[in-house]
Length: 320
Image 1 (cartoon, rainbow, N blue to C red):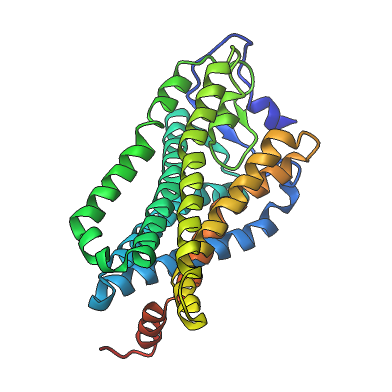
Image 2: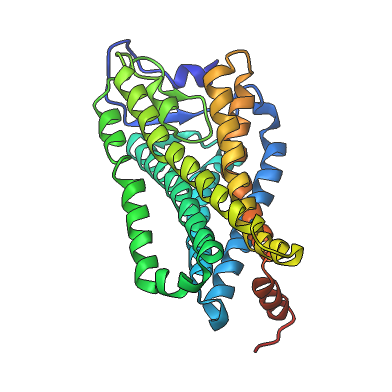
């Protein structure tokens, strides 16, 4: 009760808050310390795994190829996504540090949503890479040159950042009445919008448009790419050739499933799971941010022979 009293503004009029308060996982406050253990372990594994991937690709010349450049980008994005939210979440769990300035909240939200979109766009670019490698292998080297990869990266970055830029400005113009308590571990767009005391239909609509236009289109084109890839693979004469072609897509398919399944599940529960307990929503949202960055390096490390061999040599203290 004392906490709630401290989290409310002194009057009911609209205000431009300087501080918001994050609850962590509502309803499970007594278990925060225990919940922090798997959170911390997953975060540590994500940092170590992605740093290992980046170091391995950087130091091994044979990995300086389009697929591994895209994998490096994926590792950087996963690092940014996890470090944007997890340190603040752990400070809530460990030190009850719930305060976050309004500006810091907007910055966190911007990085969260823009890099989530960027990862989706990168997975589409990686699907294009696999499509060219399997359906037009003779044109692979001439199609995916270093300059083309750099342009793809810049376009993906612009596509992720530009639609999200208006969100902080739209939120900064809203009045916030009464409680400034965000029922979440981090500043997510809709969680902040719910605190406004005016009509927020435009904010809701804009958020949906961004999601459909970016993630929805990406998923559609990824599916189309894999339909074409599947046709090309099934047209191969021998079973051995088919298995070899499928194996080149295994890691990427794993990354797609790791990213989109939790994302779709979280969105579905958020939109339609009105009877689902709030802590389930929050746990799913955190799982969506923690699990893919942790597992992606493992998937690529296990499925990609060049990375696996290089990492084994690295840990044995050998060099090429």
